[in-house]
Length: 356
Image (cartoon, rainbow, N blue to C red; front, side, top):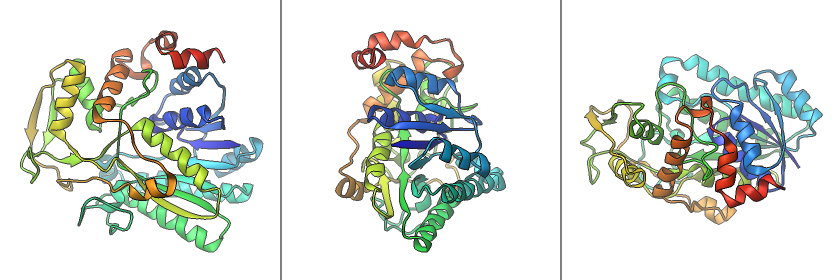
């Protein structure tokens, strides 16, 4: 079974590729490398001890995508490619609509031409907007508050319309909460361009001395410690969710599920946990709330558990520890000179894969 992974060189994509390859599936990665590094794919090969294909192509290039689908005899697509920064989407909304919405339209059109009708799409919990109740289940009202979230919702609606027009499609829509952590080897992880937009990589850069301090937006929320609460999910658990959904969508239909833990952790809880696992103090200061931020947001993952048999298993402490390992071994991200053979020697599972 050949799976095409768009955005497969990125943070989530590289971990999804590991899950697929370790499950014995064949993979072709499609990535334009606008926000990722090809080095991550070499690291994936080191982890899995298996080869796969890579094509540096933009998903908006419909002709090229169709050629890849046919050449590699792709049977299903996991669609992770797209722009994802909420703040940037407010400044450059048209860029987000072009990349995310038009890009997905081009991808789907290529899939139709190649007669590939199985698609797993990475959506986001941002489609819910401001919660009216918690935990957030899949039936919650959808009211995204930023262009990024609206692009995800438009794509969800487009895919539902696609199925209504052609009942042969098999579609999974995954609403991610807050991915964090890294592969236990330290070989792949989150490598943000410029200033990190997510909490855990920013914490790690403060702890390692690359940044002076963390700015915490808001200390007067109606939460136990006054800081915002989010649902952080280990990226390896998230990747496993894609594999579960891929197996489920062997039958026609549209499945929409949350991928989250069902637990919320405040910003200060994450800071304290990171300090505990790293042994490093993290300097921080408080700032005014950001417009659009909500006090509390966490998933109800019941539907994923009951439908797919999937649930998250890794704790916040493990997320922080795994990201810290990645940060220590790769202080400059994929731009560094870290020798992955050292990680292979350090982890028995990797040694067996590398010799396979």
